[in-house]
Amino acid sequence: MSAARRDAIVLGAGLAGLTAARDLAAAGLDVLVLEGRERIGGRTLQRPFCGDGPAVEMGGTYFVGALQHGLRREIERYGLRVARAAETPPLRWHTGGELRRTWPLPPQQIADAERAAAALIEASRLIVPGMPYDEQALVPLDEPYAAFLDRLKLPAATRDLFASLPCFFAGAHPEALRLLHVVDWIAQLDHSVWAQFAALEETFADGTGSLVRALADDARGSEVRLGTTVASLSQDGDGVVVRTAAGETFAAARAIVTAPVETWERIAFDPPLPADKLAAVDAGHRVRTRKLWLTVEGVEAPFICAGSGSPLQWISSEGEVGGAVLCSAFAGIAEALDPDDRDAVEAALQPYLPGARVLAVDHEAWNDDPFSDGISFRPRLQTPLARSEGRIHFAGADVAIHWPAWMAGAIDSGAAAARDVLAAARP
Image 1 (cartoon, rainbow, N blue to C red):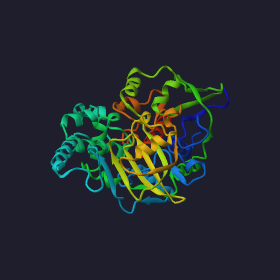
Image 2 (cartoon, rainbow, N blue to C red):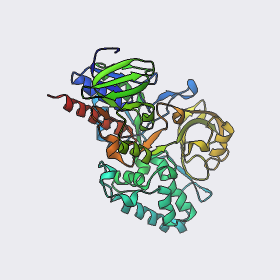
Image 3 (cartoon, rainbow, N blue to C red):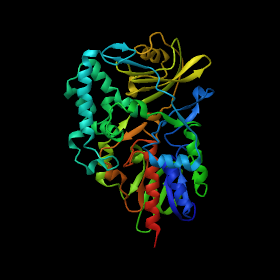
């Protein structure tokens, strides 16, 4: 045994883990946080573009403060600065095989767009946001979003427009999400399909690192160990024991696992996780999106590009670097674009930005990172994922009941797990 028994061990120092550690330490508990990476922050990561450029967000970035109340409370608690977009930049659409600089559709297809929007709004009224999907009557929504679009038999440009919606809020390809994930977002926006074009306007003015640092500073009553890979987690009626890949052993009364669900298979749980929890992992959708940052010449900013006909479904101008335009971009299917092939990235821009020349590309290999195994996870069966198993509790954006896959979901679930541990600790 490497140290005296703790009150709680938290696996992971992302937003959920830091929130849980802070709340437990504030209540007087002895807390140890074990993080596999050599940094804190989880799937948020602010770092210099290409090593020496301006700070850019390689992971989670946007939030909706008016709706995501837990995250808003943290912002107010720490006095964090928020940046808001002054106005939506001009949109460039590539739909139906054509570049459209004003309206995304030919006039003849407006009625089809109304029909598709009405179908999504009707579906969104079946969802109660914040209630587990598997506790609602959502069987009609449990189909691939792409299959839903196919059933509508939309003309090409209209289908391309609606196929691009998952990239607006999830950076995802339509094949990567279920219909319920899309309409849950629409339900959050008061059942509006179009409100999302203005909803994602808030970021951290000093980067997501400002939130991560604030949480870590406030959790200073706990001990954080970086570069510590957890190999196993066992429990009995008296407590939990964590063993690391380096052979260290730590004991505690309880544990909170905040590691992404796709990494659970690398932890030997004893007793094993229940079959329904593992089935819930298999039933969800790992979003293997690729987020890129690039500098581009030969284009006029500002702009937002969306649509189809390219491995990139979303491109947004974000600033300027040495006279070039700095852009963020999403490839909904990571394997469709090699970020190290600058010519391929430049070709992917052409449907939206003819004549664009790529100077530099940067990205974070989330899909190859053993501590994330993907950029996000979209659940279907939420109750088993979030459920505590004896003395082991679970938190994180992947298992969040409300706002799954968002920074807000990580914050909320970390706080909820801490409350569960504190409740169990009371005599």
